[in-house]
Amino acid sequence: MIKKVVIGSRKSSLALAQTGIVQHALTVLNPNVEFGIKTVTTTGDKDLTSSLNVIGGKGVFVKEIEEELLNGTIDIAVHSLKDVPSILPNGLMLGAIPPRDSAFDCLLSLNKYESLDDLPKNARIGTNSTRRRAQLLTRRPDLDIVPIRGNIETRLGKLESENLDGVVLAVSGLNRLQNNLNLNKYNILKLKDIIVPSVGQGALAIECREDDLEILRLITTINDNETSRCVHEERKFLDKLNGNCTSPIGGYCSFQDHQYTFHGVVLSDDGDNIFESKLTKDISDGLGLEAANEILNQGAVV
Image (cartoon, rainbow, N blue to C red):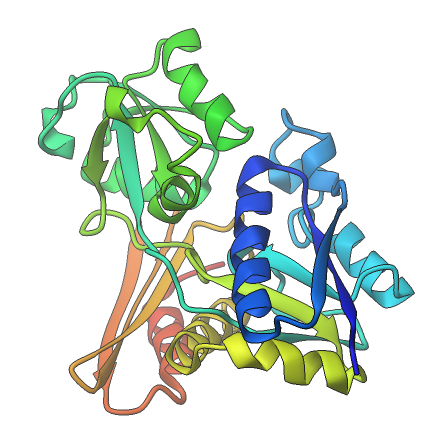
């Protein structure tokens, strides 16, 4: 019987908050097991200035953690699912996907804006995401998109240090770090109807070794079936398009009123060209691939 489980995590405050959520959920269901945390520095953590495409693109936030998993120095790893490539290293698998937080983005600013249209002409908006950039420019071509990287605290600080009119962040990150952030000073504008989320955004992934059946049985107790089905379709969508977390691609699958809805977009970097698919069905199987094929048939080049 397992007595101790070592969880691998990145060192950022958000990563540790997310790992803490998983640690707590597992502890509640397995009070006789000790769940410890080991932090790991990834390639994406070492270089906080270069574009993710420059420093490696796929897997820059998970590679070193996966190496620890394969070496047996950790038993499971907790990732932001959006950072996990669609193809995993041999011997590893996603053992559980806990319930999802919000998948959507929001705009934080020091001024009160009721909508994106209220932003001043040529407003400076901070984001390093090509997906966010392209979708914002589709709606507001005049915006000056300023590339910024770093943790949430760093990016919020750049509102003033970089003289920005707003920064775009994931709602899930703010929710998970709300006790560490003074959010009352910011105006928060929801972008649910403006920006299609990144594939897997708001969801966590628990990775483990394929042959570690005891660990697998342990972590599947916190798997959420609906979240798992939805993000599986999103990842199939991204894989078919040969995209990654740095591509100008958005994909979101949701379940409501006994139906699955999939919304996928592929854009040019400048937002001038957009290819889109919206599907609703009674079952989730095949939604992601169907949406990807529909977009490819529209002439999208990715």
